[in-house]
Length: 336
Image 1 (tube, rainbow, N blue to C red):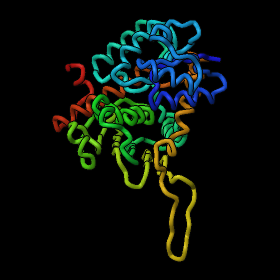
Image 2 (image 1 turned 60 degrees about the vertical axis):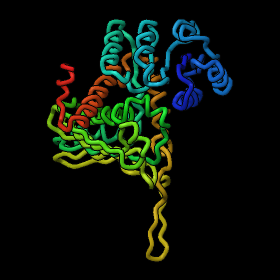
Image 3 (image 1 turned 135 degrees about the vertical axis):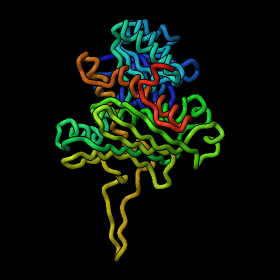
Image 4 (image 1 turned 135 degrees about the horizontal axis):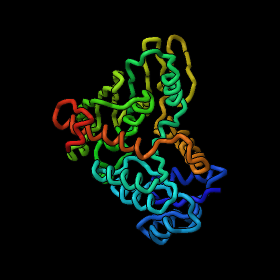
């Protein structure tokens, strides 16, 4: 039984706490928030103790591994502290709002030999993983195009969250930048991004986007396109298609239930999922399963902090591209 110390008791912290409780080899030992009231309430709901401070997680003998699910602007500092503690770490994406701070965290992790898994849960969505397996098997022949879509259903994020999130590409887009690398098994060479705020006035007021298209050129030559929107009136829509010289494979758009109805000449399907958890909720638990495997076996394959940094580099290039209206080569980031 691995005892987990959780930092961050917000929405995603609660998702992880529920999945830890489901897992037979994990238990929530402690949880921490800067707010005494919130951490006490969280401990009362999910079990374990309310940690007094960060040292009461990182240095506690009853904590075997640390899970970082706090606000993005705290990730880098917590990762550095966790790396120095010697405990295995799970960290939500992204590493930091600043690429320089993210690079600093990666350096400390390397120097400490830290074992860190990044929370790229979409790698564990079963149909997405099946696309990756088909590509990796060579069954599609020469990979040509990967198309990734993520839309809506509604903007769950508050203005306060958006203000500190780092923007559309660093926050929402980074999952799909990781998926592009994961599915192709290749690195991104060039990024071209466009964004707009077409639906939400408050997003426009922040200078952020609610709609975006990003094109990626991979080193091996394949092209990826990601279309991404915070809002879709019909429900949550996430799908991936990989196309190659020998065929294609798709992680399909999925209705809330596998039901179709015909009445006379009218054909109707079940509605789309109305929230992200109806579409990819199982991936959050499978991510926790992967973390448990990682704790038991240091050689287990999981998304690493290096993967997190690679995805963040793509996000940074997308920000730069959208701002300057031109494509950006990843190697240009080294000069910034």
